[in-house]
Image 1 (cartoon, rainbow, N blue to C red):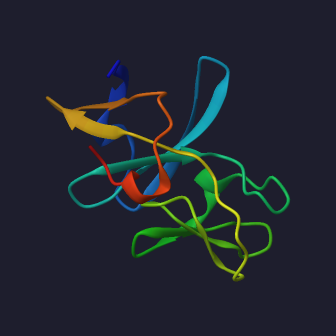
Image 2: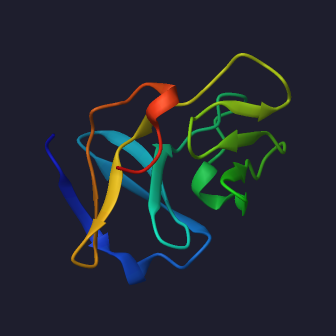
Length: 112
């Protein structure tokens, strides 16, 4: 897997998201207690910026219309619709957040 260095982990506050653009893709990176999660930054409902949403547990609530999206699977949890966003492998190595652009299957979206 090809890992891309993004930023020092401390640059993203706990329980918050930040947008990054990598190879033309806009990705939202969230730092949770001891790991990071990365998903497409746009809500499938109305393209709201997920990085600006409020995290709740291991999900983010879109700031535009309140759609709740799992950071682990990319699935929309609320409302109950069969839609998802891509999620990407993410990790912290030596204090640096790294992601891979290899989109992974929904069941395997947990941080690597």
